[in-house]
Length: 146
Ligand SMILES: [Ca+2]
Ligand SMILES: [Ca+2]
Ligand SMILES: [Ca+2]
Image (cartoon, rainbow, N blue to C red):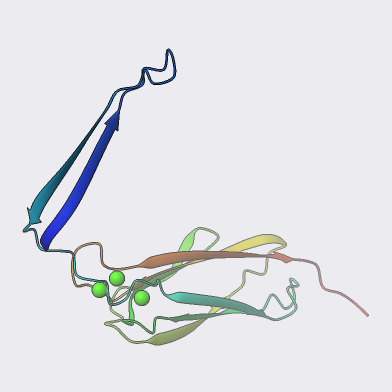
């Protein structure tokens, strides 16, 4: 808001010889009356940490510890999918700062993927919420016999 100076210089693209380019310069004083966008009080997405526990074998595939938190505004929504299937979809977190889940790893051999999506609870205007998706994978192997 207030008085701002805008300096406009336009140069044409005529370059046949040095000095061929014409330019104009104009300075205007413009009174900007539009309300500025207020600063975002929380512009960081939630933090997601995924830690696997277990042997990652078909006998002991283990589980993922999923930690999700947002110190700025808390959490609004968390979605956890394993191999494309939604396991957790909590849209009622209501701004709690932190939550964790234990998610079983499938015991079948091969690669398994966990995808965690989280959205924070900052909601001062449309588009104010920040979100993030983290993907991890693990390979389940046959049991190791010693
Ligand atoms: Ca905000
Ligand atoms: Ca945030
Ligand atoms: Ca925000």
